[in-house]
Image (tube, rainbow over the protein chains, first blue to last red):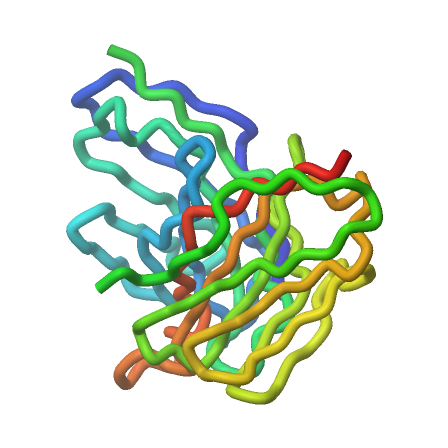
Length: 112
Length: 119
């Protein structure tokens, strides 16, 4: 699976858009980009995933560059409850799931 | 729907004691997983299962055993607990695919976690 690189931490003002970047320069053609987040002491929560087209759901938007070497998770109007560690994971679909590797992620702090 | 339920939420053990963590999911998911998370580290996969009656080792399987006798349940056992097994344990499940999207197998639903302390 392709490795990902994320900033260790980011701050965002409440009500503003939070843009979390992820680099995955070694991504292969059949690998998807997945985003999860983990609010303190809770289990990780799935947010969104995509292959090459931009995706949007009720939680966030995912923008994937045309060369697929990087992506950005956008929380359009961040709230204090969005303070969490955000994980970007690249993985091929289907098959038996050995290691869905959660790295150290980006610690997002939303400030009033 | 309850999603993924883990029991117990908290447990304190003495070294050498045994215990079982229970994970139950009501989403008819094929795949189930046990992870552990230690301070400053990411999630590490202990064991996983791709279907009823099947299990496989993950990244850190030593000292743990698992069983999946029913599709909805995945049990994690510690036969002789050690202080190094003090951790927060998360269970998760996922479908083998998601509607028409094969990518759904990587869409995991996690439980709330079980905090285990071994003295």
